[in-house]
Length: 251
View (cartoon, rainbow, N blue to C red):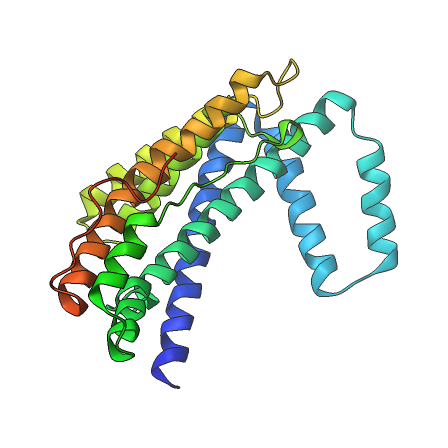
């Protein structure tokens, strides 16, 4: 097995372990707050649909559909929410793993380094590079989709769970891992008790709140990094050119 294949296998194993952990914690929340019957119903449906996906059986599918049709509306609503929350957690674990993989796969020389090095190789004058940078202005655009807006509280809970999952990937003592697990369990419990669906139509301020979430969690960390990378890339390829005094990225 190649090194790349081995790394891929390890990543997939780690992702499965995280999804299994999140599923266990959600199951604990369901048993504690919704009762054993709902948890057992959810597990029964999950296992039976998984078996149908692995080996389809029309008779078993029909029996499952009949059972689902007979579930009282209140239980059906809680069941749907349980699966929706589970898939939220699965998607969160996958996105965290993908983000980590992108960071680990990135080579030391970033796009700015390569671009400026290529300019230097082709003899682009330093004055021209400096003038271009002075005129450069990037303005990110955050589009608003009111019908798809996720509540700010949901985003906050998901973000905290993602941060704790990242901590689990670091070398930890058994006691530290237990603490992280407990913090994730608490956030999963809070997530379960947070309504995902708004009781009223989203307002403009709700969209603003969502935009602020990404500003605080993404742009405010990323923009200084980009400016620092630009300064380092200029120092390597164009030592005489200083980064623009003003911000390149304007919000």
